Length: 491
Image (cartoon, rainbow, N blue to C red; front, side):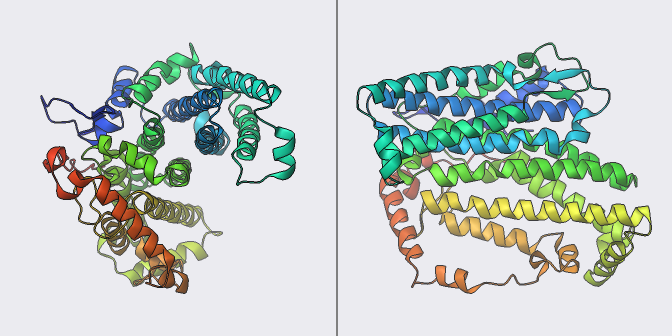
């Protein structure tokens, strides 16, 4: 489910291109919805799981090819320093691909589903073919620059380090080249329980390409990559949510073995989603983010219906309720922490003695994994306002008085209201404590003595100067944010 832009509203443009009105609009989610509507597969099935994986792979490959092609263009213009920035992004997408490529093995039981009848091969991917061609262009371009004396691999590899653009060029290339061999091997052949007419038809490769390029900006920006690292979790998240919904129904029906299989699928997909966050934190420089900030419009990651509302909200809460009911009986929603703790300890201690205790113990394990991944995701996302907006009352695009404090407040609120807290406490996990401990390092980093505050303040001052309209809510940003909270997803 998505939230569409204002009905009948006219797009607004700046010198780089269109300004997004909603997160749904910004991330091209209408294209993804259209793919699912016109190419339906059974929900939470082996085939839908396989397609979600390879669609995420297509997103990563298209973005990898995009930055590599632009790096080739930079090198042809003898701008090695600019090419290196693209190769840092390329390494980020290589790492995402590496994580995605492990999913067929990690989800092997779920991927097979029934009798395997079809094979999906990465060699048949249009995006992979484009990347192969660009990789060859890169090699030819660098060989030419070496032969002409512009680049000197012997000198820089022997004597230089990460301070050198030329060293980074060769270093990042060799890392990316090796990473390519890893994911290509892992994705060489994946079996699915349906006949495959072609890779492109099964994955809807043209549709994924349309989603990547349905909006682009003028100039040398990382807008496409910013979107790609949101589109990958959205794609995997829809499948994870469908699997979680089935797990909830399975627990209610006391089909615990099937519920466990579903939950293992959910947490494995969520693990892969998290790999999309570090490349943004590592590679999106403040100035590069500022180049595209206005075009992000009145949007926020908290407007993701799939992730923020369904995965981290509605489904997580209902799943938590079912786990507690499983532990404490059908009146589990009214159970106190002590009874939940005793039931958890009982399931753990009896796990070797009977099948239901074993399955309950394993379901608790998956619940704790889910909790930890969700809060890890929330913590990692703090990098984005910290790195690109800064502090000192720097407003968010949607008008929050101070973006970093707003995100921290959301994190603290989610932690305080976490429905898994009683189970985490029974397991002796820090996430179950009434008051999370604040270590000495954190206390120092948040104090006036730390340089961190100065960096945040400097970043905030730059952001406020550059985005006066956002800060003062003028022009396009004087509008009220059109986002509406979606209806609750009830299982």
